[in-house]
Length: 202
Image 1 (tube, rainbow, N blue to C red):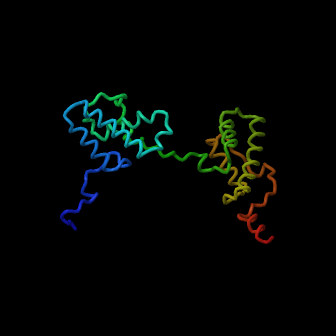
Image 2 (image 1 turned 180 degrees about the vertical axis):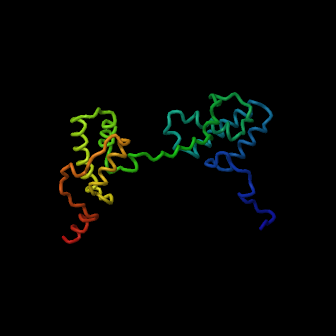
Image 3 (image 1 turned 120 degrees about the vertical axis):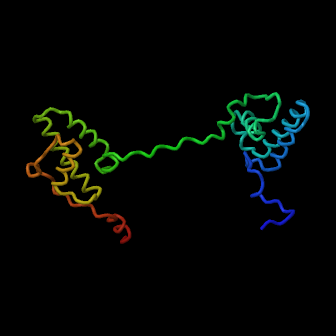
């Protein structure tokens, strides 16, 4: 509905710096229209004073005066012809939007977080180790720790075959173990929320 005589915000020009309000913007527009540079400068100083009163939180910054004059420059659409007391050539950076952050690509560690950063480093080490007893022993210890982690975090299956499959996958097929050749510990899977249920009984 358009009622004659009523001034709606939706019908007004969009404010560049809405935190200062429309009255300050009108003052800026008036300053631009003044005939002499002296008058424009005097008006600009009065406007900046009003802007400072509107946003006292800016005073917490050491360069708040620079910020105020930058804002005035932007609100004037860069048309206010005065001798600016600060360099306002970089003022437009205030309005620039930051580049969106790239969404991180999923990797082996994010998909299998329960194995942890240290085991991921061990997998990388196993890829480069020459065949021999030292690599076999590290692979055996790694497999045992992997099964412990699966049990601790309760991530689905924790059988020996899964450990062997995961170890082969994370070492790009370099480490192939026979689960029957490793004496795994007998580990009972941790029941989820077991600790919480125990607390409720007390």
